[in-house]
Length: 42
Image 1 (cartoon, rainbow, N blue to C red):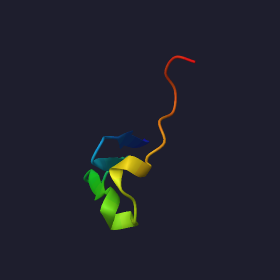
Image 2: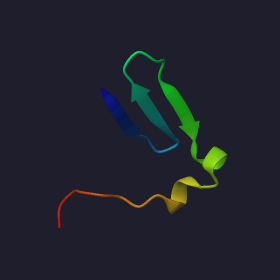
Image 3: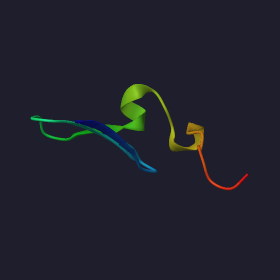
């Protein structure tokens, strides 16, 4: 199974059979304030 968890300061990528990969937003050229929120009340 593959998964992606979004946190305020990093992403966690999980793939079955591999360790979890933590990716800081600055490593992919983003700042925390650039993240678009998805979901929640409308």
